[in-house]
Length: 191
Image (cartoon, rainbow, N blue to C red; front, side):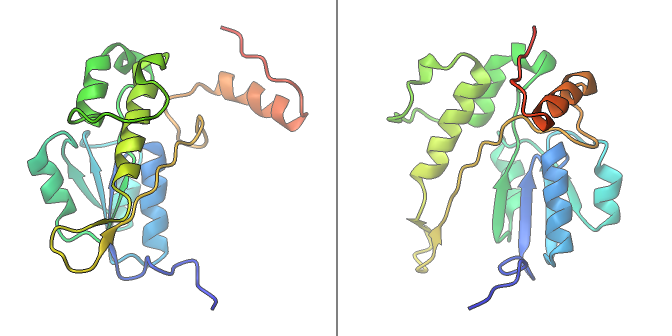
């Protein structure tokens, strides 16, 4: 059987947490392009460099906090699929507020048999690891409604992402990386 690249997207409602971010905004626009019935960008901030383009393409921008149940319930109401891309503390001043990382990404006291949590070198990596295990732990879990459907999950942690419109990395850092990569040279990062 041959599937189209829009299979499973057409006529569905999607929520993208972190939808006003670099990756989230591109995902929102791709979902619209592929025929999603509705796409919601759920983000802590009210605007971003991509807000106008998202709204022009029919994306519903919802301001809210992934740590507030009321906000999450409102954003997810009636959704068929959620892409959780929201994060906190990757770079800049956010890195020093590591308590916020744990507060946002970790909720509870789960004990997870994985790479020792205390061995992570930074709070952001630690919180991402815990969040990934929480997501994967609930894969194929039946819904509470007992309707025969299950929650399917996937965790993806891409490496550093940069490109047109990206806000967190400096071009002077990225361009030498591209040049070295294209020449298949060993990359040495100087600090």
